[in-house]
Picture 1 (cartoon, one colour):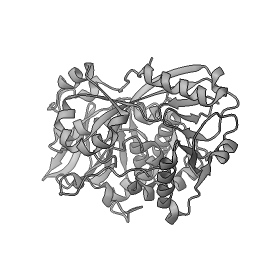
Picture 2 (cartoon, rainbow, N blue to C red):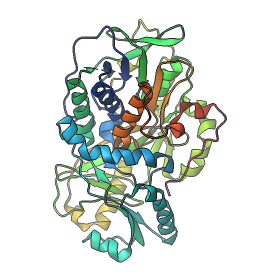
Picture 3 (cartoon, rainbow, N blue to C red):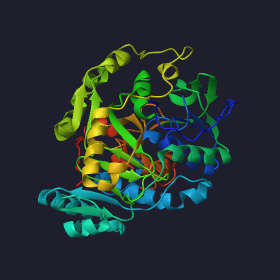
Picture 4 (cartoon, helix red, strand yellow):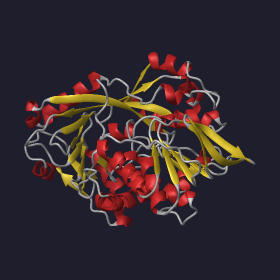
Length: 443
């Protein structure tokens, strides 16, 4: 079954000869970066090999959350929450954003204590959050059969529609003067005197002084072609959506066995609370040492498999010529098959905990590849080895909600403005400067 239906977007036909900045990749990170730059009067071209937001930016859960994030992301996500609140009015289009709250349930006393400790990360930001007892959880979610000890509840968290957000933001960027080009893969960067001077696309060259790579799961392949070692792997997440259903919770709810989010159409997005698939590919061995800490921490939630993806990536050209078709032109959209066994288990657990879902009908299922870094923290950074080249990628399943603020921070860095938040934790050089790379729990 193909991926979700994304709001249509018709890219421009004319390739600009020159712009200040080229943004590669039109997920929510790339689109937000392009919008921020265009609003500042910076000339920008947003280049997408396929359609706007057709990969993970339209396939995620649609959560806009600060709760249970890595503490290093909390300052940036606090800014994202502020941006989301006024985003629809700012861009003149609906993203489906609403503040409905997110509930993270706790199965035992240890989990309760961990969530309570995590809540201290929000104290400097005056963001409402509280621990719920089992009785309070039952009152918040009437009709549920959950046997949790309690929950972390963050009323200021919310949701938006992944199939709408990136196209809406990209359209606003175009209204502010950005060139938005779909089915226009960037094959590579050009340099003059060691500094970025342009890009080569499948349609021709664009001269520019800066490039932002926001290529999601493709970023490592692109970077490696130009001698930049970006440690990044892909994790497959499977999702289903139901047809409209009355009587379900308005809040997004996470439990170990399922996670749900109400959709704008009245249906629900449903996924496992912990199960993901990791395809073993050649890069799994290339980056194995980088990912050892995260594998030790997360191995219980990962299912490793060896299949056709290994062969596909082994055969992929990694040193393509810029005057020939690149791998990005042969695979416009990553549209992997969902793992039905995982979504079946999640849907079964959901119906056991919320009887109202016993009458829910499944409308569609899909999967997407999450781009992950060894510490599960994104890269939002210049690349010192190639002045003018920047990377905004590796959001590790946390990119949708934080996207508008990540775009603003990236625009700050590119234009040399005071940054929205301290970007130190997002620097690319952390993987090579001797820093300890560690996975910090979201608790």
